[in-house]
Length: 264
Length: 256
Ligand SMILES: Nc1ncnc2c1ncn2[C@@H]1O[C@H](COP(=O)(O)OP(=O)(O)O)[C@@H](O)[C@H]1O
Ligand SMILES: [Mg+2]
Image 1: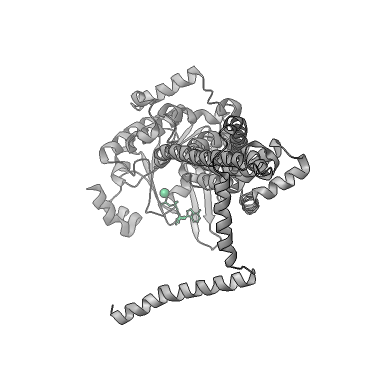
Image 2: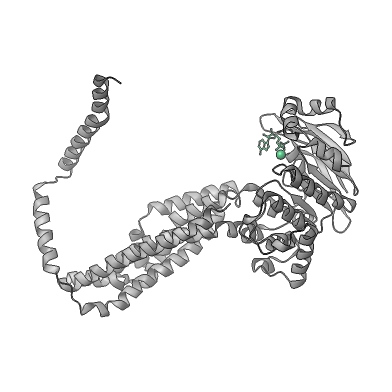
């Protein structure tokens, strides 16, 4: 490539897209009436705010153990029921277990669920059940279906057809095919996906807690609204540690499972 | 006894996959089906246990009560009953990799135990004993508790045979059971399948004419969905080139 050509290609690949992007950002900020001078003010305020939160209220930590436990429990129960529900739905969404019509309709329902934010589900459930842990668990469980339902259905569809045929050839019925061919094949994937979803659900559980389901999310929100900033800082630390350690733990176990998954 | 009468299968685009296939196999026979890739061997075999429904024709099989049934027209429930009595050995990935060898053999009885019992893997001691017996017949009893995923190709096929034996079938079908195996293992598998044909009809798809010549009692050759030969297992060069066409040279190379 000649130097002149190189310059042109650099112009095409970098300068043009970058210029376009800056222009679009400018247009967007105009249309949303964003004033960039607000940013500077925000950063100053934010720093001031964090300084005000420091140090954490050490005495609050023991009190927050129970709410933290509640948050974990919400996520755990939600993930558990959500995984079972997703698995059940995945049987209908897998082409090798279901008929084409049922499969396509179930798949559509799954993708519709994926497009509904969990907060929205919770708001609807709160109208029906009132505030509390039960609607939060249901919201978390239903929220699993969009992701787990699809992943599990895809995993089931990847089972070699000869294996499905060979178990069907013995005279096994659908339930027996699921118990003996499908489940052993998908279990490592199932656990791995559920662990991954648990990470998402911990964050969700904190969030749902803040809007009324209780737990550490509620502590955080409540301390802020009572202007107890040191207490809020303690809750914030717990949330960060919780989310971080659950992610590490989950990824540790998922790595362990990888060997079992690639085994063929 | 199994009798195939004039089965045909045509694709919506008019392509004939199976064209008036008919044959009858009795106990004492070990039939080898030969044919080039895509000739329709697997489809023929799949219509024998109802995995494929032909457009026309019938497949007559004597069920466990000695009644003659047409596999092509059975309801799902009755078809499952009939399948309990048809053992099938597939090529390649047909065992449950994460279950043990013994569990895979026991799967052979799924059709005849209740759903409730089966979902709790509730096999009886007597059944486990019998399954071990089946494994002994194929010299695999020492690996009974190993995961299938840890076995070699030849060992997997022996588990497949043990499962079929444990199933106590009235008919045994095998789709290329030796295609992925080295010559030594292929011979071993043929020697295990052959004696089963003394009790029940055995029909296998093979890609090795020298194997069918040695072990089968009869050969059926399929070309483009039609039977073009049905008779003695020893085929001449001319007959082989008629069956395989272009593919023959590669086949000869494989045999060497
Ligand atoms: N589900 C299917 N839909 C359309 N064509 C098929 C299907 N299954 C098999 N065929 C075609 O039918 C022909 C015979 O297939 P098969 O019986 O599997 O061949 P083989 O003799 O190699 O076992 C092939 O041309 C194959 O492409
Ligand atoms: Mg084939």
